[in-house]
Image 1 (tube, rainbow, N blue to C red):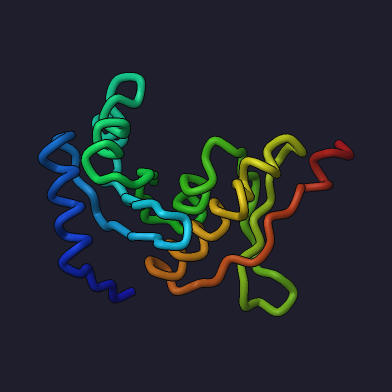
Image 2: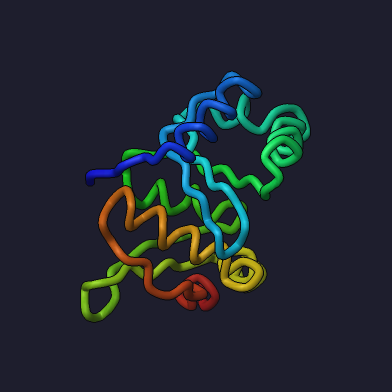
Length: 149
């Protein structure tokens, strides 16, 4: 999937590298939710977050926006699981039409976490999955099969 990173995004990525010494694969500026979403190189997540989240707080103070971080993964399902963390994603399947990917969470309590306040987490997933894999995210659904077992 072809991605282009603009000047503003490059600046934010460089700012992250300077302040945290971690490497970002990509960066999205989400004006709707007034946040910057970093896609962090696998293995650099701890470095990017910092002890007790101090690096995220430092970045938020410097940039004046909310900072969110997602660890990149080569496999689409693993990447989607990383986006929805801390919610437990048990499956990712194509919907009936085969055009969108539905995300299944394991517990009812994780449904709200997966959707996010005002749908912010679902929107983050839609933007990132479209950008990296070219697919659309459909619905976030409670996995009923797990409930019955």
